[in-house]
Image 1 (cartoon, rainbow, N blue to C red):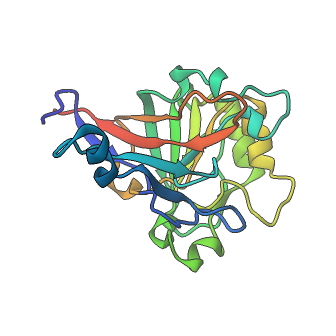
Image 2 (tube, one colour):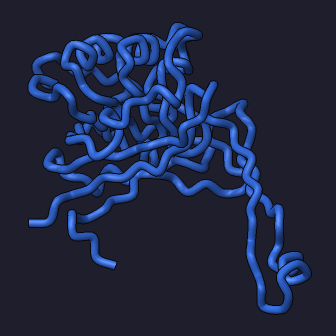
Length: 223
């Protein structure tokens, strides 16, 4: 099938049974509620249907954070504005080789209302123990610059947008305090241009949840 609006680039990790996303959080469970064999007993020979049963920690795979993740009085997934995460003009900043990533206000000038994705290529280690170690992250100063720039959302292809050594989580605190959604554990950012594309990462509309898995992707317009 041809997509007339442009090329679609998948930026999400595949979720598999037993997969671990973050140390200490439950693994994904991908199971079966109704098997094809059981369905034939209900619908007759050839009447095969499969109904799955999936148990996920809300922080599984590629996922999005909204203010309720950090703040008890922040909005949950039902309050997420689609304008922040659906077909948003986007840029991809290549910050490979850096651990504590500083984004300056001048670097973010002109990005108001845009999705800012930070490429580190740490996603190449996803699914291994190395993914949980020495991950790249944004500095608190970067968070302040992103808020000042008025960006729509921020994504990174790493374990956490914050340093896990800092229990205060300044980037989560600053961005979510400004109602800027965060998308973590992106992948395949190497396939993106620096700009000229749009970004989408929409979660289900779940009441009382501050994070959830998304199918993140970029649309690159055709010439």
